[in-house]
Image (cartoon, rainbow, N blue to C red; front, side, top):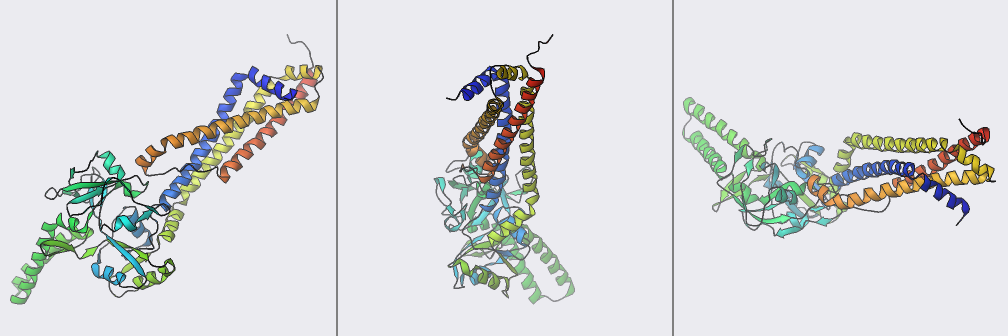
Length: 455
């Protein structure tokens, strides 16, 4: 081993407390930078990976972001429903491979309730085409069955066979406006963690969604029939006024269950006549634009068909201020780390003037002194980078399952990113520069003061 290297190592060991503190300072900057960068990437992936392998999302004509938010992230609600005729029209298109309807509006202790079909769990993908998997149980088979997301199952401590009661709408306390206690559901499946809004959702059949609103649906149907009968049999003003009251009451009841979809009784069961929207898969993804145009220009319901990928890009663009803020935080962390490194090495160099004087007295040349100090700086930087990155990656590896369950954000442990390499190279370059500056300062001071005795 080179004498300069041995001398540098012994010098670092002799000053082990300042050395450790300097490495800790650098490692904290590196850990913060890596952590902020990974959070930024994970947040973007969480948005982009919430839905995959779905070619079109179709709902009532409103806005692209509004449709994306309530259909995928269950934020907000549709302006109105679309009829089942729209689904039949979509299914009739030769380019369509599958169609999965969904209805929203109910809740369970803060979680969104999604009325859909068993095909949802087959065709709906997330994060680069991953399929929905079950931690325990299986898909619902009846109108009294329910499948719950991973977060819901864990938070509410649900097991297979447990009974749960859904509620109408969402309130701050999570209990909703009206509890549907007359129609409890039995848990038949609990999903695996996905790191998407699926974890905080509850799934039932469209028929099950109709059953919990059976009383509302029957009353609305009865009032509509009564209104039509009165209209044909009686024509005087007084009866018409009475019918108007019934009509308004029926409208109020319809508004109560409009968000969930409308239903009609058929064979003793309530069948959905409208839904909040549907997901669509094309036989050939190249036909998605043609299908989008066909659905958006249909003469029936006022439909809006959107491409999930483009809608996600638009959503993230609107949220770019948060990404910019996180990038600014990363930049500040880098600056703080570089300044900390400079201050640490500069202060240490000021305490080594007599050491440099002794080295010059025993014959060490300027090159040897420069090499030793620059080597020490590089060693400190490498130690700080290795420690900080190691601690952060280990922390992400250990805490990733908990973060994914708690915040529905996944932190895949991947290889070192380009940003990490650039940051490490910058810190090394600054370390060498600071080492040279510090060694130059110490060398000049040593030459100026010599071996003079201090009193």
